[in-house]
Image 1: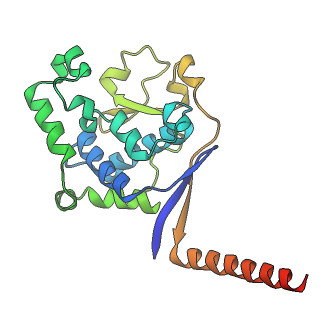
Image 2: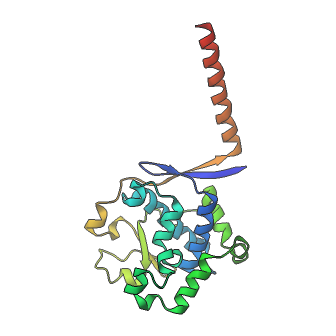
Image 3: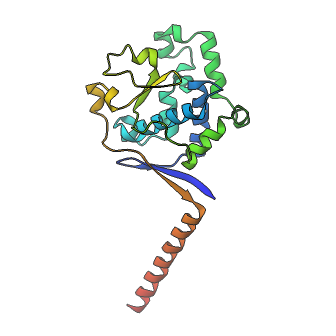
Length: 216
């Protein structure tokens, strides 16, 4: 039986929780629509995971959960963009129209059953188990609509997948590069057999140490 995979960056490892998976599936819908493809979902997930483990910002320094990063980064599920009275909506009212707010509220309350019917839930489960294949080999540290990244005075606008442009190292500005940690995110799949094996080894070590103490 496959358990949650471990994603390892230079300073920490992380396994997706069930709550992470739920919000990841919702974020897929929010960023790419209910017809999101597996290729699009993969690009989105690995960008968020690379950002989570390879960018030395508040989420890495303060020990955020992956869900916290998702909800802070993805506008459609960010609680601050759902409340029209929040300072962000007050500052950018054109992005907080009644229809935009209603869409975000809908996405943020999607049930597992609805996500399964959309076909999106499977992508999130694959991510949890380490079975979602990476489609961009290089680490990606952020993304936005290509129409936006093209206006940001970057060395290049990033890699276009489904209308979103994913920023690799060569796409970053000098100030952004300062926060990037060297390395890649490695994925380790964890099976029930491996967990059992580790438990047997640990138990043998405990028994062996107990015998050593008795004979000492």
